[in-house]
View (tube, rainbow, N blue to C red):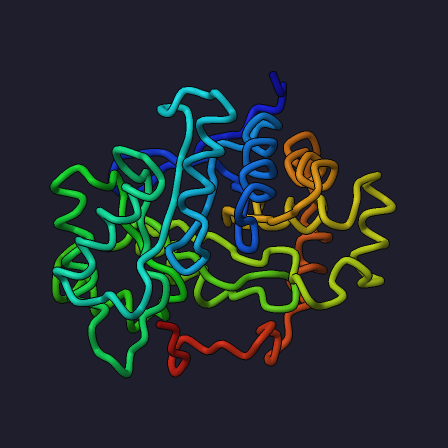
Length: 281
C-alpha cells in the first residue's frame, strides 16, 4: 500500500476532502479503468469525473478493481448544462449513480453556469434536493464567477462547498481564490499543470525545480496546495501519476510562491473559456 499520506481539508458542510485528486478527463473505456484503478492503488483517494467525460461507468469499475473500501474514497461527478432543469438534474444524478454502480457521490458539481440560459439556480436547487435524498454527500460548482456564487447564496441561502475552476501559473485566479476563501468555499483547480501550453518548460519554474530538487510538475502542484487550492492533475502514465502525488514532503519559500504568482497572464485561459459567456451543454 502506498505510504504517501494526503492531508484532508475541511468543507463548509462539515465534511472533509483530500488535498489533491486525480483528474480523469479522457480516461475512458478499459484503458481508463486501468489508469484510474492504478491511481487509486498509488494513493489517490479523490477522483474527479463528469457526465460529459463519459467515464462515470469506468470510474465505478475502477473502484471495484482497486479493491479499496468505498468509504475511503472521495468520488466526484458533474451535471451537464443540458440538464439544468430541476427534475432533469435529479434524474441525471440518479443515472450517474446507476452508470457508476455507486450508492452516492461524495461531491456533485454543476459543470458550467451557462448564464445565458439562466438555469443554474434551478440546477442548484436540484442538487440540494439530491443531497437531502442522500444521493450526494456534498454539492458544489465548476467555473462559477463571484456573481454566480452570490446568486446561489441569495436565492437558496446555501454556498457551494467547492468551486472548481481553471487555475494554473499562467492563470492564477487570485481574485476568484480570494472570493472563494471569504465565502468559505474550497477552490479546486482543473488543468493545474496547464495542459496544452509550455508551463512545464517555463524557465522560471525550471529554476525553482532545480533548486528544490523536484520536478516542475511537483513545484506547480505544491504551489497550488500552499495557495489553499486542491489540484486535480491528470495523467495516463503510472510514473507521472505517482510523481504528481509526491508533493507533501517539501515546502516552497515565500519568494518562490510570489515568483510563481507573478507568472499569471491576462489572457492566460487555455481555451478562452470565460464563464461569463461560455456555454457548455
